[in-house]
Image (cartoon, rainbow, N blue to C red; front, side):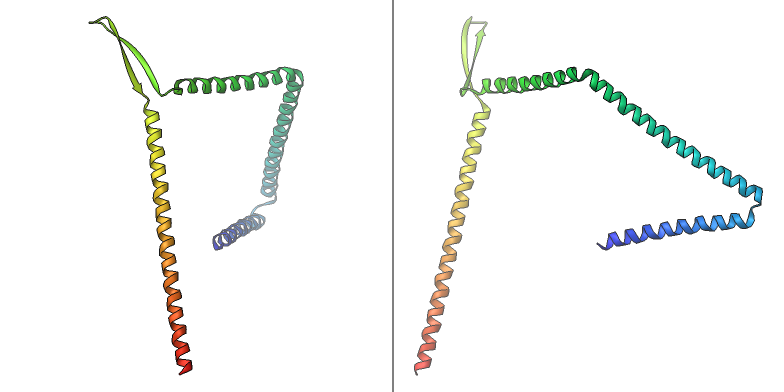
Length: 186
């Protein structure tokens, strides 16, 4: 919060300093420049201001023309633009559908069968390969189940400790109460 206040204060001080410098320059110019030099400086300022105004007018007119051109093109080709958007959406949907179909096709079944022909014997040999992904999935599921069981065991142990502490506290309170009753009686 203090950083924002310091930043704002610094910006305000800089703005005041710039305004003070500008006022000092104007005062210095008024005191030291002749009437012709003052007129020349004023003409330069007006020319620069006119140049800036012209620049902003040109930017505004250019932007307006660009907007009009885009609107005319949209009005002229709106049907084709909509058709292109629909076609792109259908193509993207087809791509996603085919991608999911191709990805799902290879993962059905747990094994891939590869047939190789041994050139020496000229007899086909069948090799079975178990997918590594399936093994990794089984391992990760087993690890998650083991972690869950460990967490449950730790939680049960903490609950048992808390229950034991509660029983001990109650026993101490009962002992203190019995001691107070014994003192009160006699």
